Image (cartoon, rainbow, N blue to C red):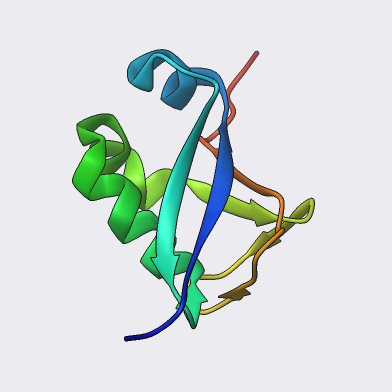
Length: 85
């Protein structure tokens, strides 16, 4: 069985409001990518599933792509699109 690790994911703006919390924990099998993280969160939280295509994933304060490898201790955030005027 592959080793598992947990990450705390910070949620911002509309995602935070839809989920009702400012952070969630997710357990992942190593090796894990940003896409795996989104898959797991989307299964647990319909609001994240609905917004998935427009969410940016930041790891250690840098926006990453879906194939970015995750590691224990990474600081992860989901950032919805920002609008304003």
